[in-house]
Amino acid sequence: MGDFGSNLRAIRKELGMTQEEVSERSGVQAGEISRIERGKRDPQVSTLIKLAKAVRVPPGRLLE
Image 1 (cartoon, rainbow, N blue to C red):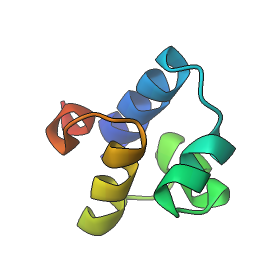
Image 2: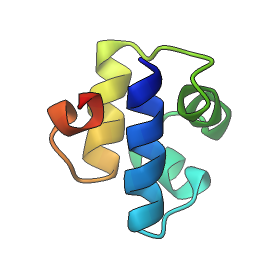
Image 3: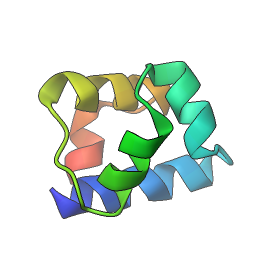
């Protein structure tokens, strides 16, 4: 799942968003987003879907 975190970070930065902004849009705590982006935590499917919606991409794109 490390690729998920890297993909999330790359997309977030492309959009010029902070972790806090993604947190506000997704309802996922910023600390959790940080751990996911660093590969320290694997997200649940429900979290993956929330984060994908927050950065406006299909969930599958985060898993590429």
